[in-house]
Structure formats: structure tokens, C-alpha cells
Image (cartoon, rainbow, N blue to C red):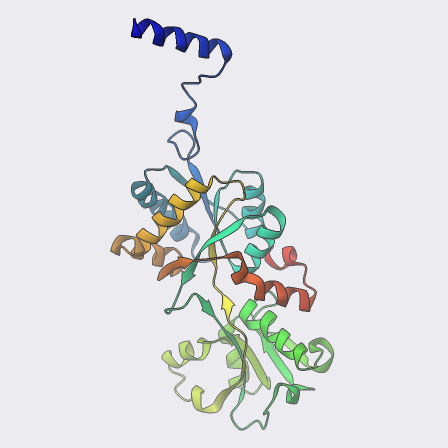
Length: 298
């Protein structure tokens, strides 16, 4: 009798179009419909591909969900793919995240940790005996940045200049050296009067034999803390899946195997929870400089 009732109920559901035996097998996170996690090859492309694949495999084992990796050619490409729901999880730097949140409503869930911190600073360096004692003293001086789009080496230091009452394009002689190392070397050689770079740029050169660099140069000013790059999820992702992804990545970051893969991927030493408000300083900087955020990350 019960079996007949069950069959009758099943037939009625099928007739009404309410029962779809394939629905569960096609749910996001299933083997037939894996969650896509996207990366950009900011380091060696082959290493990012292999590490991304391994991370997805480990995260699948940790969560019981299925993942696949995708390596995009640009951060804008990841943001567009998240908007189209072709990508559900993206690894994004600060500026790209601000754009993703503004355009799509995508949400940062975790920040990366490097050197024990989930943030970093830029700095303005000058010669030890230069006589330059304040940012205002840089008026009329030669200054080197690594690259135009460098957050710690250009955008944040430029904000310091503006806040000190300088117009960088008018009041200083600007140049772009191509890298943080090259900007510091330009200062060391006397080609410029000031150099902008990330906080630990000098130490890398000291480790490579420039022993006197710490004595011949000094820090004129530090930028505010810059939030680290993050793991973001698409705006429409189910909260339960978001929670599983976040918990799974945190668990991996605490495991030896997970630590190895994350470091191979992007030299990530750990992960911590993130909130959208963590990136307000980046928004404020972009507004002050009048930046088109999308162009800065393309």
C-alpha cells in the first residue's frame, strides 16, 4: 500500500513538473557543475596553472564540493566572468576587487597573509644626506616610481604628495623605472632625488649584495596600510556555498599541504577573514586621484 502511494505521489510530481531527478546532480558544486575558481598569472603562468589545479583538488577534498580552475589573461576578465556567473571565486588584488564590488557586488571573503600581515605599505625614499626633510621639500625634485599602475610604488605615494599640497605632474619631475628595484637603484645612483617602492624593496637589494643601501638612503614617508589581495565570491553565490569555501580555504591554509600549494601559487603564507570595508582606503585613494579604476587594472 505504501509503495503504491509513493508511486502515485511520484507520478503526480512528474506530471506537475516538480520532480527533477537530475537537479541534484547538476547543482553548483556537483561533479557535473563544478565551482570555477579564477586566477591571473601574475607569476609564472605554468606554475599558477598547476598550483591552481592542485588547490581546487585539495579544496574539493576538504569541502566535498567540486571545483575547477581557470587562468584568465587579465583581472578585468575575471570580473566580467564573475558578472556572467562563469566564475564564482576569484583571486583579486585590491584595485581589481574595488572594481568587482562596484560593478557586480562581488564580496571579499578572505585576505592573504604575507610576512605575517594581511596588509603592506609603500614608502618614499631619499638620500640620507639629501637635506630633504618633508614631503613638501620634494617640490622641484626628480622622483622615480616603479610603474604607473603600482599601488604601493605610485598610487599611494602620489596620494601623499597631493595631501602635502603638491601636484605631482607639475611640481616634480616624474619618471617610471619599470620595477621597484629599478626605482631604488635610480636613487642609489643619484639619477633621481626620491624613489617610491614597497616597504621591503631595499632589503631585497641588500640581500643581493648592496650592503650600504640602508646607510645611503632613508625613508622620508610611509603610505597608509594597503589591504592585501583577496579571495572574492560572486554576488549571487549561495551563502552556504560561500561559508563552505571560506572554511575550506582557512582549513587548507592551516595544513602543511595547503600551505605549500598556497605559497607556490602566490607566495601566500596564510589567509584571514576579509570584509568589504577593509578596502575603503583603496576607494578613498582612487577618488582622491580621480582614477578610472577599470583602466588601472586592465
